[in-house]
Length: 243
Image (cartoon, rainbow, N blue to C red; front, side, top):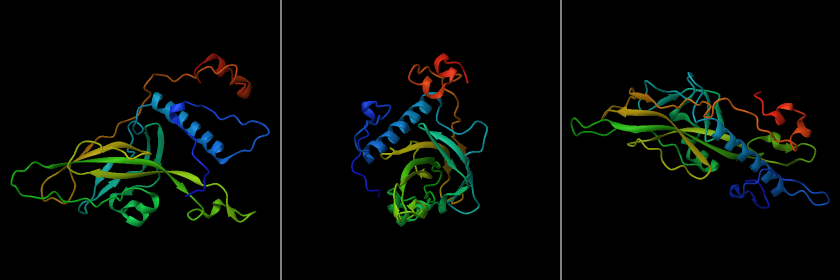
């Protein structure tokens, strides 16, 4: 974990910027709050402008069955979840995600991804078990132990750490409801599985991926004159015209 003096960010205060003053020290808490305030502004803007989901008419995060028992393929792609852009660059196999490893999950501070189970039977004629496949998105800290480029070669020590957005695919067995997300996590439903009793292969998959779109029509640039205009010299900042 990074060595931080304190966390001063409070979204309930509705701050939108941090303004440095002359003649005072620059503290890590101020710098980090600036970053958090900016990120919150972006999340709020995306959430107000676009609905959650994946790009329209694409295969992003489509869930597919496999010939192996109790396993799934998840196609690579992009999504927007509660204002947070997320991208997975390679196709995923459910059973080989990094967080199936308990040590990796503990290192990253997340729950282990458990193996999928075959619905037990009998009784005869029992209805299929319904499982919910969903995307779990969160940010985690990356230090020099994981990325050696974070060590400043001029002084030989780590300076700043990074935050990395991660995405895992999880399955809630026996339910159609999204579970409660832990602090710092956001969820997006991907698919519903109908699993007959004693059948290990997954074949009946209902696509639940929402497709994101503008929730308020054509976005417009708001006027920030006079504070914004001298910085950008953009006529759109004052007029509010479409870009």
